[in-house]
Image 1: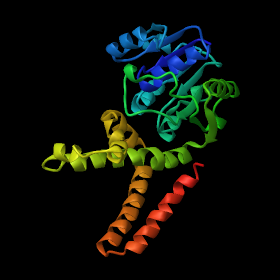
Image 2: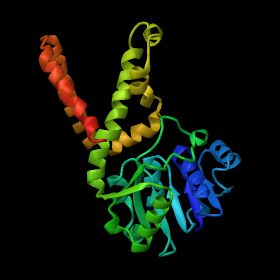
Image 3: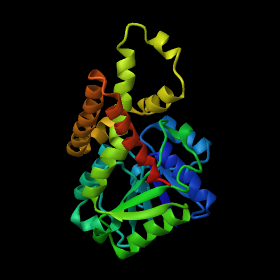
Image 4: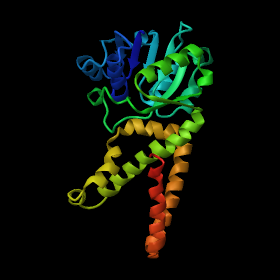
Length: 276
């Protein structure tokens, strides 16, 4: 397949490496608005060549690995000339992206969200194994063409990903709880420590628990501002429920109801039984 990747950071660069590893294409074209990213992606072999945005959009398969607002801007101004062209986006929100597609190219489009990533960004962060063994959510597939849905499933399947299908609204609700809420909590935790008079003294004691919980606060603020804006309603719902649960724990500590607190903590332990 003739494949182009638009956006050569963590997600785009990693899928470029993975596509080459699995022999899904002999040549991958790449485009990134950041010229330094383009040069670095080429030097690291994430793509075979750098092309213009217009040329990247002419490929048989176009993978959009850009921030969610950029993805919508590209799609709003795009018109395909081939009924068999496949456009796959990798954005962390799906409803607004799915709804932004013009009717004349809707069958060409597949809304996908690979449930993977790190707190790092840019071509240097790209990892060949980022996608393997993880889940990808394909949304609103009934709106995609049969050919395009098959191409997307073949690509993600060949990358050793578990494929699940879901409507975009349900995806965004679930993503608010398992992805977007953890990020906003991590940013809040980092800000809380930074607001103290001597954050360096506090951090001198930091161990695994704090590092794990604050890791996501390294993520790109511009990218996550866009995600939070696009999924605002669901994110606010998840924050309110989190605040409610945190408030209950706070109250039990204030009133020194230690047996009740232990019961709440034991209830929380049950979450990880689901993953077994």
